[in-house]
Length: 511
Ligand code: DGJ
Image (cartoon, rainbow, N blue to C red; front, side, top):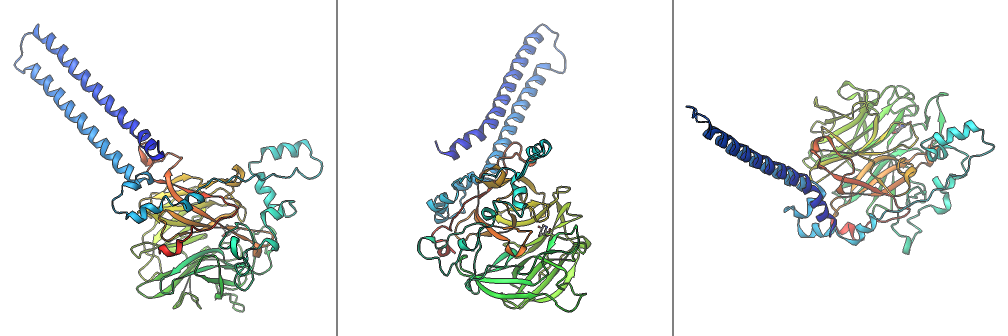
């Protein structure tokens, strides 16, 4: 029996149960009516005609029950069509697109790959107290990861020898992503595009990857402040195959002299994202702008006529008058773009449409995940549903990712749980030791995406690594949702761990 048929049966159970209850209540109603009739034979007839009244009651009960059943069936079928399971029955999908779902290459990406990470025994003599503390810790893997002297450093941050060098890798290793390894550009230098995002430029049929260029030394501005690198600028790389990246230069550079400028090197520029405005024909960059202590909490905007810059900085603002830290932008199919940002002391995520020229926010703003402290948002869309991956707030340290879904991008947003699949439990609750930054749709494979994340190295931020993994939207969610009446409203979002993986063959020809 196929999985989807089984699912269909499972989902039918509650509807069947309600139908049964309905039939039973009709039966009881008829029985009651009969009893009444027998009793009434021995009673004096009244002018109101009690028999007729009781018949009326049972007829209306039957009609209401049937109506209820019809309503439930309708609700069920519409919900069923909305989930990934109903996808095969959607008439608007072409045959070619439907077949792509069952491509063996995609099945390969959905293989659950275990990762047996053995933590070394604790160093030195263990006091009973230390042993107890260690046992109590939920995330010993993260502690080990953050330990600069860890004996597993080479596991978390493999050295130069294993770097991915698209100019040298030929044959069998071509096009393979190795999450966590050093990734070299076509000049042989480690790619510097942290907290980044990708724009597909239709005009040149080229992908552009923008991110924080962090090739400077890491230091702490204050004893208790976060590790930082002075602003150098936004790095830009171009590619046709999403694997070989050519360095296009720093497309928005730091300001060296003017200390009052947002881009002065002593400030913070994080998570730059670029979208193209079809009306103004400008490439528009939004980014997180802050001071050393993260108290400015603003967004910066820059524009360019070409994807490879240079970008002209237009200034910064607090969107809607609120604090803005981790952020992203999302351009919808209808051309409307949105700013999504962590606000209100990172307690709430704000989402608001941009003006037509993408240079400002409008007065509309939705609030999501109130009190949940989510950041690092990465938004994507599939079959009319909006999805988002977020992280918790723990500085540069990894934490558990969550997947969310919504029918309207402004909300309400539902949380579906941790999307990570494979690895091991500790690895999963640390998002494979990384933090979300962007989700890129894979052309030609509806429901397939690349999950882009950063494995931050707080001891040496320039040496932070990229964790790219396949993200698939399919199958039922594993956490019941508020608005679902017991049915899952959305499809599951899964990020599959792979030590090495590559895009399905022929992906680029499906554009
Ligand atoms: C977590 C954020 O996601 C990063 O972009 C960065 O701001 C760090 N915090 C700084 O500690």
